[in-house]
Image (tube, rainbow, N blue to C red):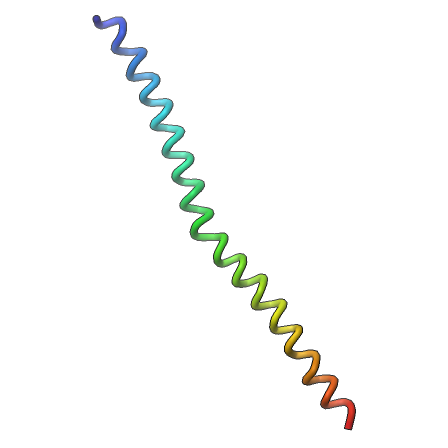
Length: 60
């Protein structure tokens, strides 16, 4: 009965390690992806909103 115990705990450790790595990746994506999307869209909207103001200031 002892010979079955180490193999069971070894497989339990590898699945636990995979779950830890997978959970960490999900957590990092959850924290960084929204910030990257907000930064991307806020920069593109700021430059598109600034263009008409400069054009109208130069026309008169």
